[in-house]
Length: 219
Ligand SMILES: [Cu+2]
Image 1 (tube, helix red, strand yellow):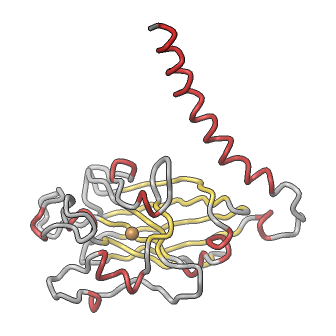
Image 2 (cartoon, rainbow, N blue to C red; image 1 turned 90 degrees about the vertical axis):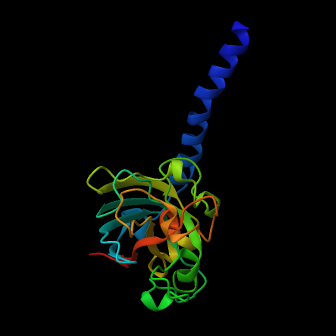
């Protein structure tokens, strides 16, 4: 019994170390780079997050890229207090001209641009900006690994992730979307706007986009 427990504990402790190594390895691979290459110095980007769905949310995302190591820092205000906010980098890296949607994307006219209605404009989830673990599209709605706004509706997020070369090369074709709105102002996600078109177990309020910003070079 004791042996079994200690093995299990060792596995739990060893796992984060293995993950850390896996994340660190690509960075080491860049050490041979020519010192003049942009990847060596890093490149900086910014996205001004503007409200969607009259959410009142706004924010700034600052991104820096070293090789394929992308650091994403987001500071937002006006989000639903105490609630998780799914956030993603949307868009594709194959030359599609995606952009943040406007109200005309509300195709059924119910006053909410849902994630599905916005999809033709902002494209699919490319990266899920989770707080830990997987960052693929598959984690898009894993709300227990998404950042939570504080009691004032402020949200701070910072994480360094390894991205594909395609994403590193096409960051300015992509944009950042934060989700979660509260049209009836009761400070929680409820079903007043129906069920989420993405996952019927979740309220529409939890998955509808709150703000969006295109990723641009910053100087
Ligand atoms: Cu999204």
